[in-house]
Length: 537
Ligand code: F6P
Image 1 (cartoon, rainbow, N blue to C red):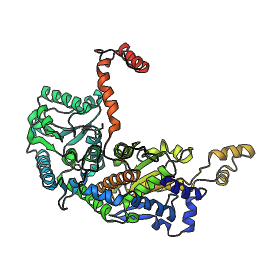
Image 2: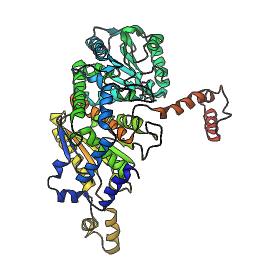
Image 3: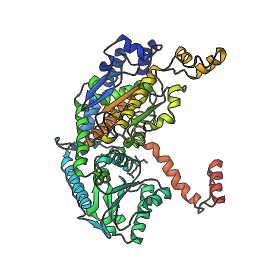
Image 4: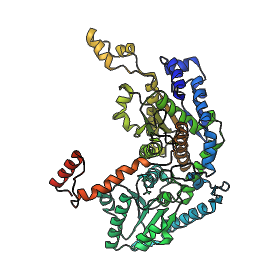
């Protein structure tokens, strides 16, 4: 018997229950199954979780040793056991906290010194004190991929109202279309290129960096002033030819997908300025403090994690949708896909034994209201239940367009209500009565039935500010950590990306025709042959 069996029994005992029954039985449910902290409200009352089930979920935290693992993370112990590394992205936002020790050494002086250098550099670029060969920097191109791209790219879009620095562009894909389309129209003498790579070996990033270097050289840019690097491999940045004054290092205890709080956030700092960047860090630090101090049942990352565990591991719903009703959070689903799926998409536990249940779920999403006109049909009437995570701000940033925001909020709230409530056959019949009769009425009504009883959670915040964004991202980071601890997973390695990288390296010469496809499987060989017959390679 596994620990999931107990929870599954609890669920089965209430299998026929409707979420609306829970509201009917408990007039205080909306508050009893919601948490307000740090100015945000997390509402999980529209799930089919009752008090006994919540208590059983909370017990998972203790049986998994969550308190010890949390302490081990914040104290710099090597909880990334397969790589023998500490996990200390929280140190990057420990702005006014105490010392953080790794191997007995306080890392905070170095963190503060690097942050101060980033501030100085960002101010110099933003003010025009440091210029390109053709004048003040007008554009920044961040070249990176995965954790060296998604975080800053997402946050630069999210914080557009704070954007008072140079325009920021992000190039990630090795597809030449990405860099070609980005550089077209930019002035090589007034563009700053930031090469962001923790390892400084990632093939996509290094290929794009070399292309950008050639573009700048040919276009009369000044490489010494217009190239910067962000990496843990400072010797490699020197070999690439980047001036040490423009290199911002960090340590291997910052995982790629957790790295936007430090130098990987340089392009964000260039866009919004050091003060707003500080506010972003302060928001995350506030969430760290909450996560460390609050009881499990009053702890927002823990409750968010437990709803995830309930829906995926207990109820067996295969995916979860992240649905920000916030156009500026349009890259958040992609960011969360890496954060959640690269962290918890694993089949073995820390000790190498197979997991005793499913790993983390598939995460996907799009901003509302756009998704409503695309895939919500399936969410409402498809046969698979998709637990939804809605997000929305009480107020937007465009006071003159407040009526837009009211509509946005109404749509967000309407969706979670519709998912929960559904529409019965009797209601559907009433909708079409008068237009159809007899068998045709029954047929038409059947198409208009919504099963309802579909779970969702909602995170609502006053307005999307740098602090609130910091809080939201740290909330999700800790949610992933909690789910990983409960599953027994190491959430901080990513061995699953290695095989494809190795095979791509060996296929390179096959695609360019300098090596034969012999030894490859028939499908791969035939696909390479197609490339060669159609002008590729
Ligand atoms: O391929 C996965 C990965 O290693 C991610 O974990 C990481 O964020 C990304 O590649 C980029 O790596 P780097 O910053 O070293 O270029």
